[in-house]
Amino acid sequence: MSRRVVITGIGLITPLGIGVDETWSALCAGKSGISEITKFDTTKFDTKIAAEVKGFVAENFMSKKDAQRFEPFIAYAVAAARMAIEDSGLVINSSNSDRVGTITGCGLGGLGIMEKTILDLNKKGPGRVSPFFIPLMIGNMAPGMISIIFGAKGPNASIATACAAGTHAVGESLRMIQNGHADAMITGGVESVITMTCIAGFGAMKALSTRNNEPQLASRPFDRDRDGFVVGEGSGIVVLESLSGALERGAHIYAEVSGFGMTGDGYHMTSPPPDGEGAVRCMKSAIKDAGITPDKVDYINAHGTSTQLNDIYETRAIKTVFGDHAYKIPVSSTKSMTGHLLGAAGGIETVFSALAIKNSIIPPTINLDNPADECDLDYVPNIARKANLEVVMTNSFGFGGTNAVLVLKKYHP
Image (cartoon, rainbow, N blue to C red; front, side):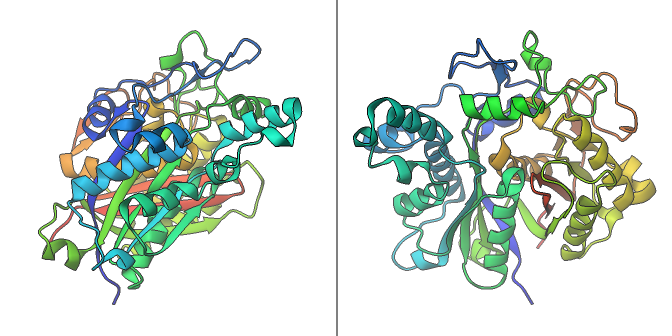
């Protein structure tokens, strides 16, 4: 029998705030973290808005040398990991370091330093390329630096499954502990790609909102007037532990991670199938893995990107999985406030799901004024809702037809 796994620590760096308290308060208040892009000149761009992290001081979480050297995605991951480890009270030392691992999800890694290096290479030649270019660009430097700084020498990996990466990372970390390969895992997602090439690339696909004059109204999942997603950045990290280990040291428990599903659509590079068939199998797999029936799910943190196809297809998939019960389950998209953090989305949304259980609050879907055709579920519009939550599901779906779903439960001895 596999071991039970619980969340004992959480850390957040998001467009809504630095730290868990600031982010969660803003989320429950229905605030938006979306504003005009400040990281580059958007004059020639159709999309001029994003959900940037604001007020982040790297030196508050790491050495001055590391703060100056790291790309933002590495710094965000290290900062969120420090928060989560300190919150958990987990002490990593020579007696347990090889039993504590790190797996994080990241979609694109150091896109910013890649842009800069290519420009430098073209202008100044190969002699001006930094020797740190490759190490600071690759996505696995996030778990790598977490491992180095905090001494976690167990399983170490980076998952690059686009917008499902953070959820896949938590799910794979769950398996590591369940199967006895580790006793604790530092896991979640990170992303920082509010760059010219990212915005231009998604813009060329017509995937981004261009509601530039009303940034805080731009991300509007399930609304008929949605016109695309908004790129966000940040990191969400959790500490997972075996239940026995957590109890032995008297750790605080936020929630139990009880189910994980992962599937592939086998359909299209960027579009989910119209019936959401891959998402359906993924949700069913996670529910079965959690040892429950669909009617036990009390809340769904939706992928909910605010794109034309996702919101309808995800809604169809939920209806297929839950039948009539779908209309009784609150479903909300926190991306309406944080924007879409791509590879980090599953990390922060795992934290949000755990906090929803712990605090008995369902975050709202803001900007939902006129539900789109077929989007007729209870999306918790605009105002957070008190609710006793025993079981929460969180969905993540990515380009390439990759799907990941987690089921979290309120912890009961």
